[in-house]
Amino acid sequence: MKEVFLNKTINNIKKYNNYSDTKLKEIKYGLETIYLTIFKITVIIIINILLSSLKELLLIFLFYGLLRLTGFGLHAKKSLHCWVASLLMFIILPNIVSIISIPKTIQIILSTIGLIFLSIYAPSDTKKRPIVNKAKRNVYKVLTVLITLLYILYIILTNNVYLSNILMISILIQTFLVLPISYKLFGLEYNNYKKYERRII
Image (cartoon, rainbow, N blue to C red):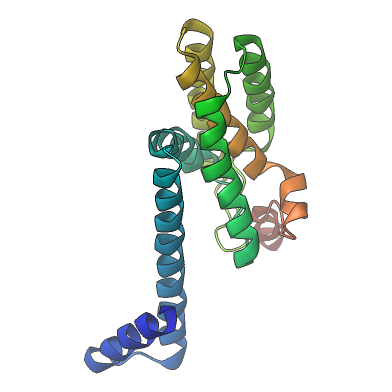
C-alpha cells in the first residue's frame, strides 16, 4: 500500500516537474514520513476508540503537543522504536488516565521533577533539525518552562483529578523525550547544535 502510494505520487510529480534524482529522493522520503505518520496516528486513534479512551488520547495530544512545540525532543530513527514508544505513550497512558486516580501529592512531585529536567534539557534537538540559534534555544526553554509551570499550577489548584492526570502525563512524556539517557536508549545523537558551534569557532 505504501509503495503504491509513493510510486504513483512520484510518477505524477515527474510528469509536471523536471526534478533531479536527488530532489525526487528527498520528496519521496518526505512523502514516506507523512504517510507513516498518518498511518500511525490512524491506528492509534482506532485502538483508542475500541478501548473507549479517545477523549483521553485527544487531551494528551493537545497538552503534550503544546510542550512538544517548544521543548522539541527525540525522533526515533527506527520504525519499530517509533511504534513501541507511540503505543506506550498514546495507548497505554491514555487508558491509565481513565482507570487510575493518582493522588495530587504524587502528581505535583512527578510534575515538579519533570519541570526540573525540562528546565535543564529543553529544548532538545535532533540531527536533522539542530537548534543552532542560541537566542531561539533560550526562547524555547523559557516557553517550555512557563507552559509546564501553568500545568503544575492547575494541578495544584484544581480538584479535577482526571485532567490533572493528563497534564502530569503530558509533562512526563515530554520530559522523557528530552533526556540525554532517552537519546542514548534509542541510539541517537544529543545536543546536535554543538557541532555547528564548533564549526563556527
